[in-house]
Image 1 (cartoon, rainbow, N blue to C red):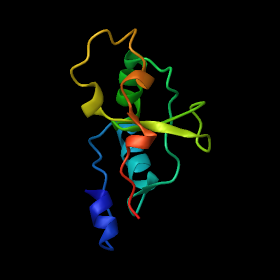
Image 2 (cartoon, rainbow, N blue to C red):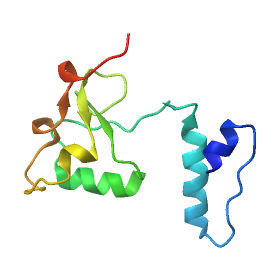
Image 3 (spheres, helix red, strand yellow):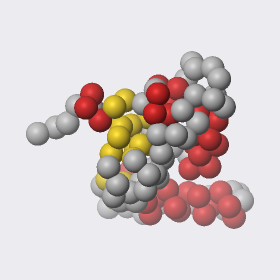
Image 4 (spheres, one colour):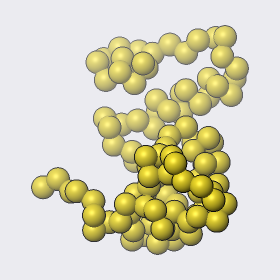
Length: 111
């Protein structure tokens, strides 16, 4: 809600009943948002397992990640992985992201 209010020229308020950690998380989410563009994405490697991806999702609070050659921003984009790609898969500790991600060549790019 704070993001929507800020986009419309308002200010957001963080509730004081949240723990300090939760307040920091809320502020971080708003500060990272810049008109719909993610300026510092969290990238993962194709060798990342689904179990590691699940942990990262819990930690970061979002479910879609770019997959790059070495897991760093600026390296070659290999594809994208979203929650939809992984929801109903088993063997989370042995399945790698590279085997189930949407490959770069299959992504739809706007002109």
